[in-house]
Amino acid sequence: MLELDLAPEIQALRSTFADIQAVVDVEALQNEIARLSEEAGAPDLWDDVDKAQKVTSALSHRQTELKRIVEIERRLDDLDVLIELAVEMEDEDSAEEARKEVADLQNVIGQLEVQTLLDGEYDARSAVVTIRSGAGGDDATDFAEMLMRMYLRWAERHKYPVKVMDTSFAEGAGIKSATFEIDAPYAYGTLSVEAGTHRLARISPFGGADKRQTSFAAVEVIPVMEEAQEVEVPEGDIRVDVFRSSGPGGQSVNTTDSAVRITHLPTGIVVSMQNEKSQIQNRAAAMRVLQTRLMLLQREEEAAKKKELAGTITASWGDQMRSYFLYGQQLVKDLRTGHEVGNPAVVLDGDLDGFIAAGIRWRKRKED
Image (cartoon, rainbow, N blue to C red):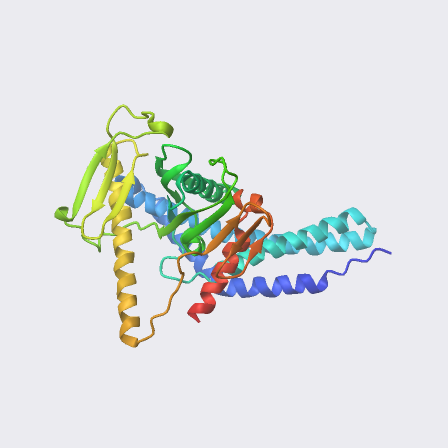
């Protein structure tokens, strides 16, 4: 007789899913979709392009959230039917399919459970990710490109749209820096735990002595702000440079000088954009990112001042948050959470969900 006792696992899944539904508030989500759908159906919607894009983007994000909830509920119901069929027919193939579905649902619901911990002010927004090479010469610029590919592959795995906004190629290998937007619900809250300094240790492919080389790259994650006008940037505080977009090795891409670099003189913050079609669009995109960075910097300074006045200054992220060992032991280890994976290749190919989930839970514990 076929033995298929998955009742404890399914009960646990349903319990966790019920908690998620309570936090998400499905009814409120449905009402929000109805309101946005009505706005999106207005005949004059596209008279204001910026407003139209905000409405349609918000509607798409909310519909995606609801679709995930509805899909999980359907799969749980279908799972009950599949198990009943497998037992009645003593069908081992159906039983194996049921076991795999339970494992997959545990993963999917686990990810959704982690998302419910994202309750920060900007967590639900899309994200702008910037990667910069640090110390380490060609190894560092190569590492920066490896990290960029890792995050783009992560987004691809989740079917999240990505828009590369700027890339500065190194003279040798890899990139000096890159900025890209990941347009997905909770992309900022999810990826914000990836911010910090990443360290690579390996036998350098660029040196002839077969010595271990350590190099660094920094990852910055900020939310996409539809409007950051609350931060005013006087024209006298910025320097705007226009230059020609370039590809690897300095090859000219555009026939006009459309790329824009804005330097905020008081803080030294530099933002470059080159992937829009015109200089005006690149400048507008760069200003949005600059305003967001200034707003977040202002809030960080205010929070630090409050901690100083309270006498409770504590280190938060530190200089290094994750190490990638590509020699000997072959390991990727998060220095905050202790989460590690013994196969760096799969991590660098975008398998980041375990690190991200551990990071979100770690951050939540620190907040509590």
